[in-house]
Length: 110
Ligand code: AMP
Image 1 (cartoon, rainbow, N blue to C red):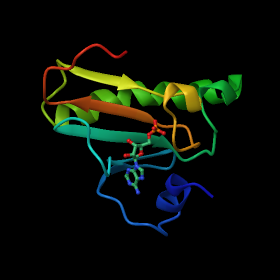
Image 2 (image 1 turned 180 degrees about the horizontal axis):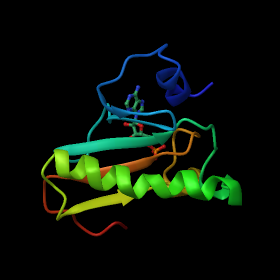
Image 3 (image 1 turned 180 degrees about the vertical axis):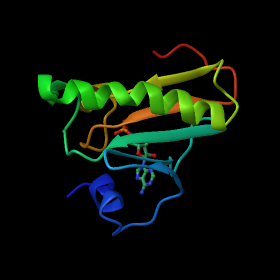
Image 4 (image 1 turned 90 degrees about the vertical axis):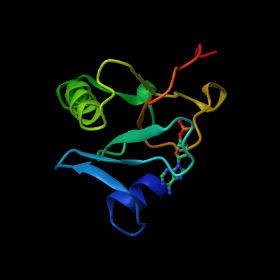
């Protein structure tokens, strides 16, 4: 079971930002920017390579949540939303998630 599944199941604590039936949003434990949040669908999908057509409506909500949370943190004009897909792309936790980072000038991704 992944760390994120344990957070979803309330077996591990997190610094919670937002939660509904489909998503949980919390602070990254090792932030790479002043604001570094993780938007995690509760459905256990390994990564973007495992998304199915039936997930698309649910995943569309990621953009609304990102916008809403970015507004709460005052970074709605300048933030980055990204998902690492696969080990060689830097994925460490194999439960689909989206990094929302901001609060400083962000450099190039690669
Ligand atoms: P990724 O490399 O895209 O799989 O991202 C995994 C992220 O999860 C990393 O930025 C970690 O710092 C973060 N992380 C790992 N464990 C925890 C945890 N218990 N609570 C919050 N964030 C975590």
